[in-house]
Length: 167
Image 1 (spheres, helix red, strand yellow):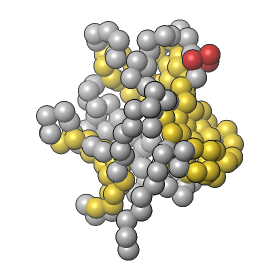
Image 2 (cartoon, helix red, strand yellow):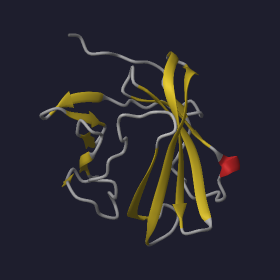
Image 3 (spheres, rainbow, N blue to C red):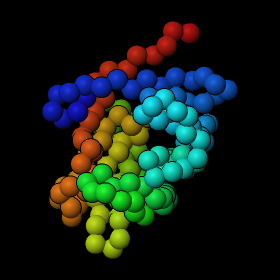
Image 4 (cartoon, rainbow, N blue to C red):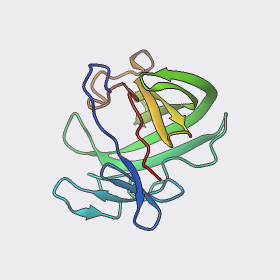
């Protein structure tokens, strides 16, 4: 659920030879985005400005406190025309209990800083819970970010419920 009360569903299913399917994104067992379904239903299997993270490893398991990694890519700007280079810096800060509407989870708190050039950076925090194999909470940090419109489509959210498939 987003902080404004709007709800969304994120279905995590396993199919297609072990791929983890989250919405329109297909990840392999190592969390590399191997396929994205585009707006018109087309299959995207290599990076391009509209889908820059195809081929990138989002979560480099095993995750441990102190682990750092970086992802660089070209993408379209969200607030203006054109394509630019982006760098994302990640660091696992701590292992903590995080409270959500779905309950309390043991989670790794990850700091993500996205930079475009030297003057612009945006920060968000993600809590990854191995119990649900995904993020249970996300917070955008406006006081650590220096651009009001840099991530126009990023909103805070937290897990409201978890439904597990029947075995």
